[in-house]
Length: 244
Ligand SMILES: C[S@@+](CC[C@H](N)C(=O)[O-])C[C@H]1O[C@@H](n2cnc3c(N)ncnc32)[C@H](O)[C@@H]1O
Image 1 (cartoon, protein in one colour):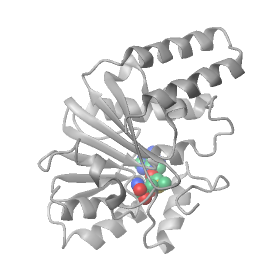
Image 2 (cartoon, helix red, strand yellow):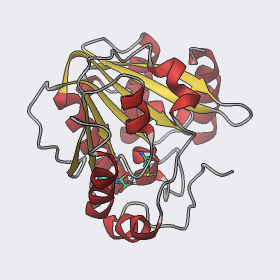
Image 3 (cartoon, rainbow, N blue to C red):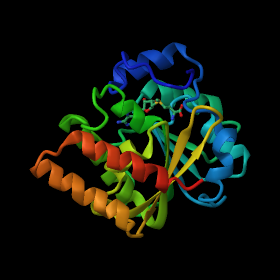
Image 4 (cartoon, rainbow, N blue to C red):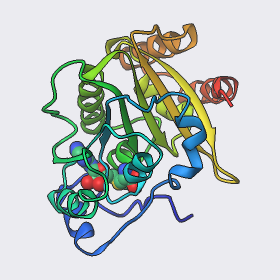
């Protein structure tokens, strides 16, 4: 499948991405903007301040600019990527900005964005995990740092939009946390292979199901579960929760 990552690559390393962007002109993870524009436009206003995390060499930001979203800040920790993208788009997308920055430590003030958007960036951080039910503590810590930063820079009522191939029974385990002060909703798109758009709204409560999931996971860390039963329950719940 063209859009799925290769498990053998070192996606967590900036050196990997720098090398890749020296030769690769563009690559689109999980389809281009046209594939999920119909979902995105329900959650993003044209004049929203938008932050794109791990922009890569995707055309998503310039496609959004062409569609009328003009207040877009892009970050990626690969300086090669940021240099290339800035040179490519500065003339045609005035006002859109590009910054070399680590998503774990954003240099933006609290509550400065209406929307934070990522496509494939968290997947890149997770893809080398051997067991999606049990993310290693190193990666869990990395993801937690990024999610805390996203929550910090979102305005009240702001949305974190996450485009991924990760199914809700895996991804909600990371997103459904009271600490991040957001609700979690799931939408999906794609013909044949399904991708997901998670919409996390700052200032809204977790649903009772998501709060229950968080509670269960917390209990599991104290008292390791019968894994088979837990996975089964999660799979059933996930099918009920997709908001098509
Ligand atoms: C799978 S690519 C996705 C690129 C692009 N968003 C797309 O849709 O095609 C992941 C991107 O995240 C960037 N990235 C990974 N970890 C990062 C971090 N900690 N901070 C900022 N960018 C990061 C990589 O450099 C890479 O450009």
